[in-house]
Length: 101
Image (cartoon, rainbow, N blue to C red):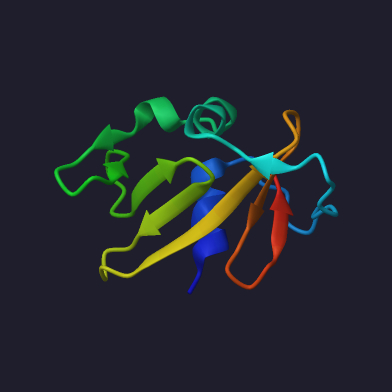
């Protein structure tokens, strides 16, 4: 799956390879924090399936407490967990890979 590249396009500010070690102060980011930190979330429109879409984009996004999920046109989904210390944010994929954004 290409979750990180898809999310990178969505987030537009990701810095691949800039992972940092999790500290004791990292916690699950809530939905509001994620939406405030990610540019373009105001452009998303909710569909009947519960996912949000940007005009012209076939990938759906679901942003919840601690998680961003992508629904691909093939109906497959992939999610990343989102942690923060209140200033820095990081995505953690299902293999444990971390990317700061």
